[in-house]
Amino acid sequence: MENYQDRQWASIKAGLAALLEPPYQTPRLQRLRGDLEAAHKKIDALYTAQLRESRARSEGAMRDQLRVKLRKGHLKPISDDAEILLEGLPGVEDFFHVPHKRTKDEELLEAADRILRHAEEHKDVFIQGRWAKDFVQKAQAAADALKAKLEDGDTVVNRRSHATHHLQPAIAKGRKLMGSIDTAVGSELADNPVACARWANAMRVPQTRGRPKNNRRGRRIYPPPEE
Image 1 (cartoon, rainbow, N blue to C red):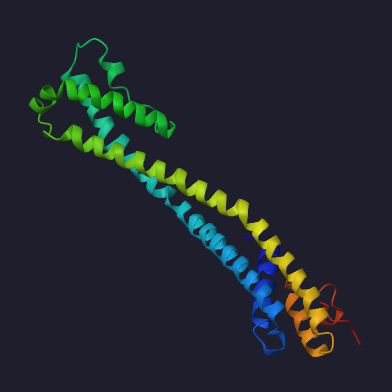
Image 2: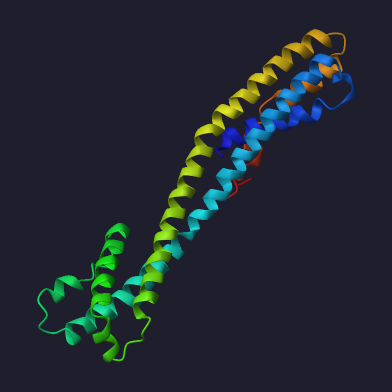
């Protein structure tokens, strides 16, 4: 959530807290508070989704690990030994070619399908070469794990994009409701200046905190002037 959005949301929460106080318990203000509460719940859900999916992006490291496991741990050993075990077989180099380590995920998975398909065709030769009987299945499991992680990553991006896209309109709706409440407070509580002032303070969007601008009292001169 951007800084200004943070402060707008803070004003909505402050407004909800103020509307719980006794002076604001009129039927009209109670109805408007219910509308504002619904808007707040939507904002909270979108913010939570955005935060959760942002954290999920750190799982990119796991995707990289799965790529290495598939390419270096399975495909490369199969490819290297295929050139020895299947020496003389037409097309063996193309059948078992492993793409560069920086190739796209989709291209790596396509290469895995090709390599494992040909490895399955010549599985008996590999087993005679002292490979485990389930070497193809293990390599396929590594490819499936990477594919699943990529699909999950696409879902994460979509969910986060949805939350980001809908967050500002939801906040704007909450602030618009506060404008309606402000009008109602001015109308129904005109004889209660304390309540009006309390609401005005709650509705105000908090200012950013920062260093004071050109505050001479806070400045020190080095070296200090001579007497």
